Length: 328
Ligand code: 5GP
Ligand code: MN
Picture 1 (cartoon, rainbow, N blue to C red):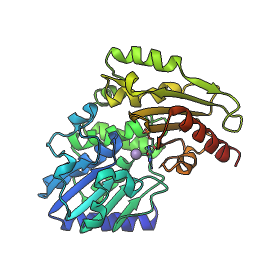
Picture 2: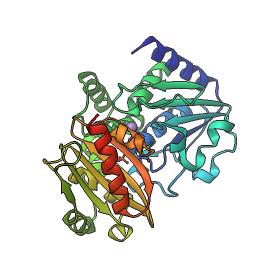
Picture 3: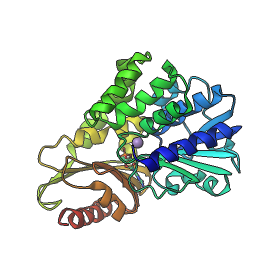
Picture 4: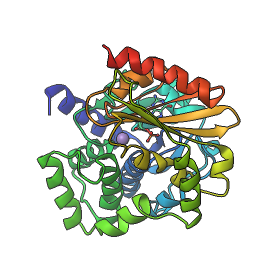
């Protein structure tokens, strides 16, 4: 860890120790890393005697698979987030815009602590602990908990494990040191299979019919992405009707297995003609650059953006951005 990062970590611990009221925010459409990180830190801060709440800008409901992490009932609807929080902590949030309808709180909060692992994070906080080398924001939070000198119990360790197992694709993108962190979390009592299965491997039966329909329409373009190949699928509102966001989010994990494509994309229709797009690369294309050309962001091998219009138009713009990045 660099000196700058250590200093930032100490500053974050100091700010949180001094606070009496802390609001922790995850990015919109929060995943296990964002919400797990927020809940882990929230649990600890509540035990330290602070008034704590955890929230996110959208959607209105908490993803079903993440509800069990909130053992202390810290989650509140976005509407209950104070207009001017004393201390705001933004987690796994690479830019202010990713807070969605709660983005204005960055301006109104007394102190803003940013805990993140996105290389593109501009450092929008008063205190910024941003470590692009960390495979998950949950690891940044764990370092902060160590800095605070608190004990790691099972509920806290479980929240951290949830972020870690998902962001590392089940530890396939995890360093030796991060595997040692995993060992520490298991030693704290985490049941790895019980945490991971609902998050990554469990869907209602209707999921299979949705997949059959969506995957049958998937399209492969071997010449795209500078000849490295591009595969994409589209999940319309009609395809997703009656299913949870969890089912829709997992489609990309199947599409990305296409051996002929370096880059995979899934267009997810959030409302008519408004799409959230997931991008994945195997190893050679930096999809964060691609997403940034289209107003989004993310990591080298997993990124995303939102777009308006019909699916064909969105795919056309994506293909152009891919060529720009792939051909350097
Ligand atoms: P996913 O495809 O799982 O939704 O997102 C993969 C990664 O891309 C996330 O970890 C996040 O960093 C980034 N990402 C996804 N959607 C957006 C977006 O609309 N804007 C930005 N800036 N980043 C996104
Ligand atoms: Mn993350």
